Image (cartoon, rainbow, N blue to C red; front, side, top):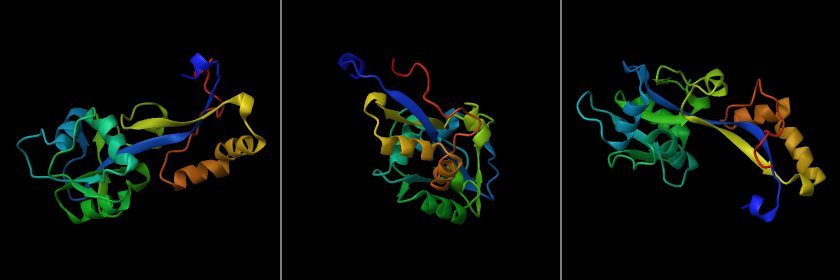
Length: 189
């Protein structure tokens, strides 16, 4: 739509949204394939140990984000238990030997839980940066350079600064490290 109106936008990388699958620390599960994750959370998995699924509530962006990234847009299993925050999911999984859920990557070290590798790839910042971990996506801010105010420029500089990247990380996202923090080429000519 922007192109059709003759508008040019620049994309600025500010961080990554990453979601980790977690299990109770006593669980023997250490790795799952993306297919196994999809089958577990959609309820298509049959047999095996009983599991209790913990998911975000419908009003959460993570609810839809995980559905898109891990479940190919399919609906969640009817038995899945929705909770209001990632912290609640981590606590529920920690208290439930058969619990499995998903949380922002900042909670993979929460007490009583363990992150599960997906397709043999652990949910780490390095794996996200290298594009190896499947449940992550780049967060971009789009700006029209012709209409970018001084305050907006200042905000972009802050978000991409070391201090701003610490804020990104403190809010549960993976900072953009080891990348040039400039507009991405070819996004919008």
